[in-house]
Image (cartoon, rainbow, N blue to C red; front, side, top):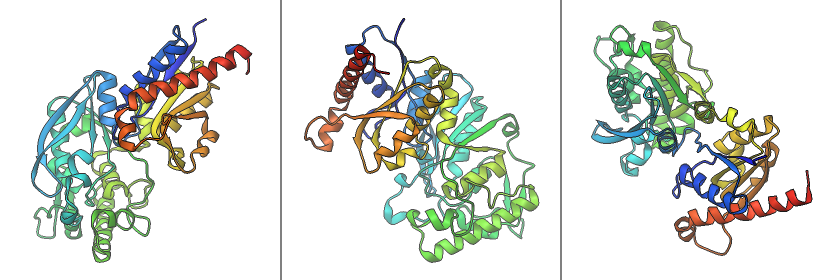
Length: 384
């Protein structure tokens, strides 16, 4: 009977894509078990690398759109069309992310999500009706107001004029009119990859927790928190949705709550969205072994990062799971309680990060081969 192995790693951030990691692991496996029945399922959790992973693994394509960036300038923003011909994958960080702004120019009062709405509109024009939106890394604090305006939703002040772009504009919001919202939104599904549970406002809300890293001073934080609270009040009155204390509504400067309120979106853990789309449960249930991995395994891994989501599925089917990781950080042992039985680091001698990055593919293959040799010994000894 063939030895069935599912290989489901995340990208090694800044080094190797999830697809390349999986291919390297596969080569390492084949050196020890040449007849193994291998299924490759590169994974992601909604953060960096999600776009690349889903586009590559589904045979999709990348598309560049000219849209408004977070500070109002026009930029070229990349998004993905998946191989099913119906789904678009969007990373907020590529449209209105912190990485797009010089530190000296950060201003969450005026940073806007308008470009996200423009990308959504172009995807609708191309007949995509299912959207997976990774919202991590955003520079904005406008609860998706700019996105909404780009899609025809009217956000009006007391004079009946459109409010200004940016989080500060929400202070003047007096009325939301949905009548001119792009009608194709009604035909579409918006899944938000959200891995935080912050409410919209308050001491654990978007502005207080994430505002400072976007450049907000204490005075700005107060202004932005008040603005988001006003937004939540108008949303409740005009749309009938209570988003202020909704878990995850504070993600990405309130974008999580905005998509729920204005586009009827759903907030779902990023890894769950991706793994469900890839149909990984069915592939793991009949496997003899699962191999996952990531750039660094540490105490943060257990917070539903993709490798842990993979290991939990494997554990539910009583399938052993091991990990190949770029490095092991503080608290990596915590993953043992979540279904990962063994971890191998690819670092096999003293080396710089630059060298490890340059040699990563070969190191992944080598580490996998060594792990398989240990497994081979266990098989020969018939150790269960």
